[in-house]
Length: 376
Ligand SMILES: Cc1cc2nc3c(=O)[nH]c(=O)nc-3n(C[C@H](O)[C@H](O)[C@H](O)COP(=O)(O)OP(=O)(O)OC[C@H]3O[C@@H](n4cnc5c(N)ncnc54)[C@H](O)[C@@H]3O)c2cc1C
Image (cartoon, rainbow, N blue to C red; front, side):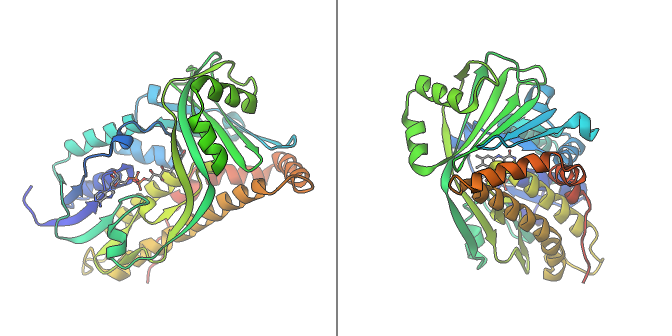
């Protein structure tokens, strides 16, 4: 494809690739800036909980991984630190799954393949001139500052430890989460509906994170077993442990004349609700829609146009940031009487009928599906 390009997307992560495919379908000429991955990115052991809205989008783009790498969650079992418990079930909600646990590398590979077959997209090694630059460089974006954006970061005193484990018992499509003493432990089903492996995401307070990362595998497995009981039988690490510092962050401006932010470059939320990438994919979908619906006389880099996208997405992102932050803080407060109160609250919530159903629908991405562009 010969330059000039309509859009230059900086960053070929999941959000950048998805956006490139959406724009190319709209006949826009896209330059996708892809840097060689850092060694740690090549062996990313995380798995993402993706909601129904994200799945629909990736299916449409023919980039949804096969059944082995996208395991449906039939039940979510969330436990507090003093007997509190909330259970969600796909059967009860009359949906095929509450979420799908997706392997990062197969998803990136499917997206890369779709990009390769799309003649409107050129993968390039450096930024190219274009009517619109979209920054999809993730949380550590360097271009963001070049555009004068202030990225307001609040660090959590926690790191998330991720790893994969093989289990004695099949997971049965159940995703488990335990809140205890300011730590959040999640075990997500993997390897297909009948699988018996799990992805671990353990958000742990700082000094303990160092200790858990440094200890021998057997000792780590024993610690994990103590924390989660017999839900999966004996568990054995099948990958290295990797860790991510955790933060809540928000860009003060998402756009200007000729540029816009999307995904983690614009916002970060705590992973306890598994929503960061779902938000980023909803950004990509909304931005593509706003550009598609622009008046014939508006250019792609028109700031007023880009503000429609910013307004439409900011409310969703803020609501999720506050929800995850609130939950994190609620469970970080020291023992009695708060512990009793929060566990009592969980039990009440579990029987709350319509409120519980509303929360499930939000998490499944139904809010993001209501594409609200709000014209000026
Ligand atoms: C422990 C953990 C668990 C998580 N679990 C979930 C989950 O279950 N569900 C969920 O929805 N979300 C989850 N998230 C959030 C999710 O990881 C992010 O929201 C998602 O990866 C953001 O995608 P992105 O494409 O915006 O950014 P990234 O994935 O960070 O991709 C950015 C890309 O840009 C590239 N890049 C960087 N700088 C430049 C540059 N200057 N030029 C060109 N390219 C550049 C990078 O190499 C990278 O390829 C989790 C996060 C953590 C930390």
